[in-house]
Image (cartoon, rainbow, N blue to C red; front, side, top):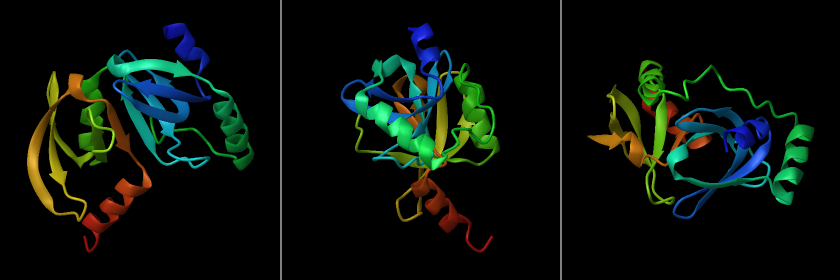
Length: 171
């Protein structure tokens, strides 16, 4: 499957995550633990990035819809480059980078409809600690998330960017 994934680099693909989530995006990175997509949440709109845990991927394909979306994205001139290189091989280093850059992330576990939002405060060999915030930017508790339970990690999208602007106002 590793060879198939490299064939998909810089192409619009659809990925199915167990139990029943689907992600469409431009594949921009492949690692031992994670795939990195420039996320396409709806139609031809790119909105941030999503890391998908390879452990939960059940299917990767390019559909007719993906091929059409690819053509539209190319016509729009969307650049599928990320702000910097991300370590997709080592989860600890990946989340260390998020902590060092104070990147607000969204965490998806089993339920595709629920996202935990916060800042990474500590990374360990098998888990991360995250200072959670509410949708109204109130500080919540700090929680631990095991790497092997993470399905998707969102970052640099409009929702998270908007929350970050609110948090940082007046600083």
